[in-house]
Figure 1 (cartoon, rainbow, N blue to C red):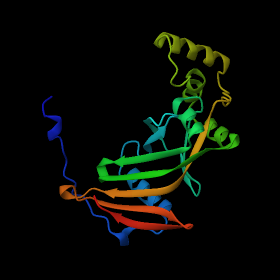
Figure 2 (tube, rainbow, N blue to C red):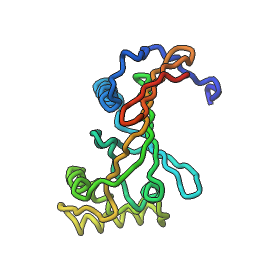
Figure 3 (cartoon, rainbow, N blue to C red):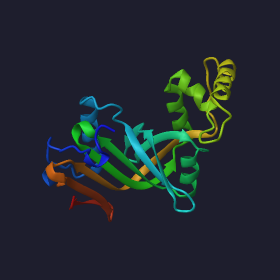
Length: 212
């Protein structure tokens, strides 16, 4: 490598974050930051790390795409038979992390996931690109496959079976994570970052500044 990993670093200089900058409702605060990330042209601003835990307490994480934010929480879609789908069925507790490096911001979220209804999943499925709908039928997510050729042959078969109208697979749909805690992180010089955590407290949101 041209530069040792230990020496890779960036000084965060863009902005600070004060308690007075925050909206009392964390969902409103999230929407504000998310819209700023989109308007700033952050690539795939809706990309988020989803962390789940298996039956042995072993965590796993991957990048998924946020597809909705409302009073229930944060929605995303996946194969229910995938590793994350099986893990969420056994233990619905999960965590999300958004990182917008261009804005020197993170949002970390903890909560529990539940499935979206079939009607809501089907409504989203119908607006996906045709190729994405085909690939949902092809991919048995996380399963071992013989090779790329097998995958491409399955795609041809599905394209022939469903040339235009592609039904919702019975094993595919949405989850919504209902948050119990959200942390808003703004990078600051010398690693003295600004961190504020919202936590549910008797039906309300309690806000605390955290040490960096």
